[in-house]
Amino acid sequence: MLATFIDLVVFLLAFASGPYFFGAEEQRWISGGAALEGLDLQIFTRDFLRKLAPGPRGMARVEVTTLTPGEQQLCLVLAAKKLAVVMEDDGKKYYMLEQGIHEHLLGSLASQDFPVASSVGDVAASTYSKDKKSSWLPSFSTEVFTLNQARG
Picture: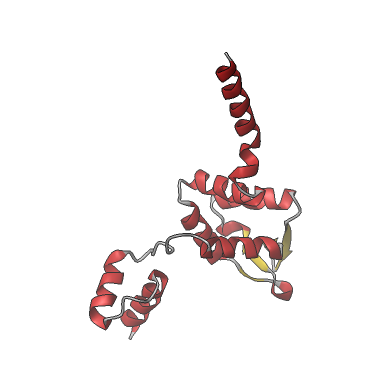
């Protein structure tokens, strides 16, 4: 009986504290956007960061029409929490992100245990390694190299 009571108390404590130990609020929002897209968190974040461009005073902004449904939901939550604002410039609507959110997104890629997945794939990485005898470059560099090699 005592063991059952202790198990119940431990379960309730774990259940109640789950959101606090799962991660920061912003991280859960990003995870939710990734889930809507059916993508890995890192891939979702990478794709979203690629859409960001400098706005007024160098603040990161993203055009509303380029957003996927998961990215749109993330921006809506950020705007509701006053971590992003909707602005209009030259007839286009943008979400301008607060600097801390931009830093969090970029930093989350650096803190992962594995490199960002390359959209070019392992074939380009292995071709580059064999041709140039350089396997030390990160996977995203193979995309740039492959594009430059194709052009020139």
